[in-house]
Length: 454
Image (cartoon, rainbow, N blue to C red; front, top):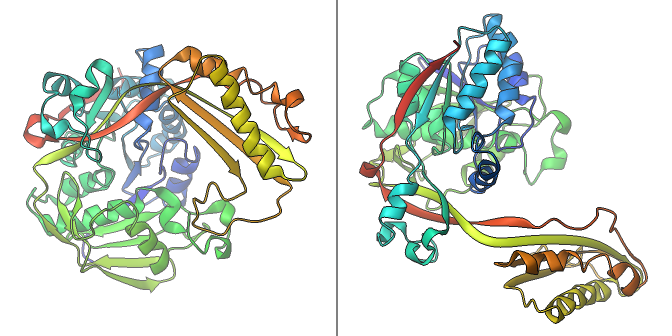
């Protein structure tokens, strides 16, 4: 393969295994880069709620603990660099907290590169009539939301990550970037590719896509999950990427799970849309001519990615205030459990309407009866145990709060065999709606800042 860099991923989402980053570096001490992906579509909504309570937050605080866990390795001479999007809505705040943690650990030589520029909320507000800001799926115009938008973040690409590494960063903290770009950035820097080396960028993008969800490519969510070895210790993935963008996907030797053609293909087709035009801010990728080969146990080679120019716009992940919600669960046992559970849900909603609240949205699910499968699989029959899940959403806080007070009364006014209510009254939570849209890439200006321990 010629010159190769090793890029591992030990975080598939915000809430993944907290000990995985250190464990992966200890299992693979020759790792050049460790990527950590914290941001799913809903993550920034959660961060927006946190930032409303405390303006200094708005980032993945779990990452600070990761930095603390890695500090002893860096002090001992570990050269692995970290690239992550833990910055969320506040990359500078995240970096400052990391620097404080490094200082307390007497780890003074680590430099942090901060990537900004993904926040395009002001642009959205200035141009609500711009058709690019229309909802990508429904076509709804942004001006129908008005001043309810809370965040709007463009998916940046690999270039600012590469720039931060060029300027000496040992840790790169970004806000919203495209998931594969966390991997493409180090490749862009290490191999000196130009932004028009599309086939190289395409190969690295495929590698980044394969490892971005952590253990999904090593057997997580596999249809053969039960057949995999050592399920309690499924290994996080490593991509060995060469100067042409070809890669080998593997995992640490003493770890569970498996890297096979099947697990690679399952992740390859995950959330890609059109396989002939997999879009990223770095390149447009065609997956149609990929060659996937099992070279050895837990080593799968990927070649043949074809790249072309990226689209002229970035995807934007925006969120807006969309009212309030609450959900509750009860367990119903005994004869006619499904019918009783369904009727319990209906009774609660009837009582809520009698209180004067015909809520905007509600959902009754009898979990175990097939409701969660939406007709995909055959539902079991003759059930004598069921879990009722009931949720409501409404613009009015008081409507949802009234709902939360109607759950416990089912204990004495519901059917015999009603239980599972010990968690207490449900909480009323704000709802932030998800709004995907676009912005012209020339309207976005990434910025890189290097911060050091003082």
